[in-house]
Image 1: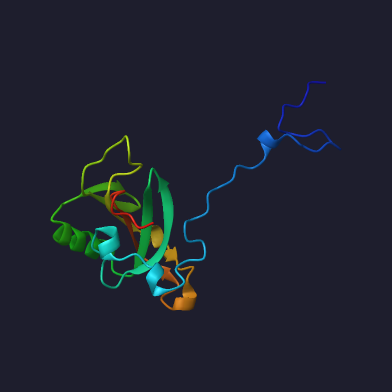
Image 2: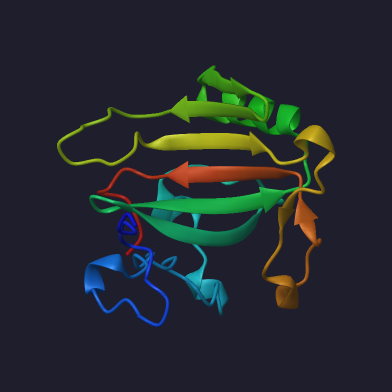
Length: 161
């Protein structure tokens, strides 16, 4: 009989090797979501415009002192790309056709101190008949889903703590 390769345990045995445990996934910076208006990032703290009817969803640690800030809206993907093209005075680039993703890189990417180029990314969450990005923060109102998500990655020097 051939030995069973690890990590599969033999019947009756349990795995105790800590190297085989599930990796720990870092929780979002604001796991409880914004609890007050003071917790919500602003244009001044991000250094980027925020679409007027966009709702703050959550933030994630991007590494190297940067964070991703997500905002949801039910304005269409096209409306968001047009809006950010005008306010950023930048055409940006469509990086994916399906689902549609458009990036506006604003500022210089410094690989030695940044995890991601500063800028705004627009993603179409209504692609292929999807309801959209689920709104986990329903207690503050808002729709159950957002068809478009705006991701803002500020420069590490302007990022909120």
